[in-house]
Length: 305
Ligand SMILES: Cc1ncc(CN)c(N)n1
Image (cartoon, rainbow, N blue to C red):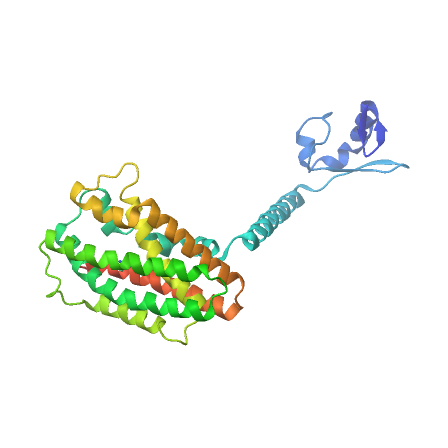
């Protein structure tokens, strides 16, 4: 005996009913499965207390039913993704949405060539000279961010984090000078290239008091995060980074710098969560622009622009 929705049925009763309806079953998939097999999924069996009735669906209809089921399944997956998206923090959401651009910046052929040891040393020297110029323009940007944090932040600890960033940049400037002398790169005679000038001009635009603290701190996170991800990758398992370039990679790829970037990301996410849609959109567009500039900066280092 089988029990379907509390209706007790004997197998023989089902067989009888089935046999009775076989003439109407010729065009259905159940017919092909054998005379006495019980219907599985395709035929619908309606049971009522009064009568027991097989209702079959013509074969051509099963495929449209299948596509309806598939659509429903897809809708449910989409709904679940939307729900988990709502829980996801803003930056993670953007990184998922713009993964291709983010990967172009953090897995660029320039840093990949450092990782696999094939790097052209003249490209590395070009990068060194140009990045020194960039970092000098980066300092006033971070100083302007400190001012914004002091005026606008809802959390006092932001100021300490940014101040720590400025202190690290002070070390970085000294490091560039030492490294440049090690590689015989003359910093005083290095001329900023067009791409670098444009990126520095972009930084300058972000220093304006018109630019919201949330937008600026999110840009700051993105700028630091690209270097952290790129150089950490040059040190991760399987890398063949030449010994003489490892110190450069450690400068941004070390765990402490990773933790610092994570803190910046938390600040940015906290601010974004409380921001109106207009600010969120501006911050997103700014991050995309930063990623594009970072890609162009690596391209320039390879001598492509
Ligand atoms: C171009 C660029 N982007 C980011 C960083 C990391 N401060 C840097 N030094 N230079």
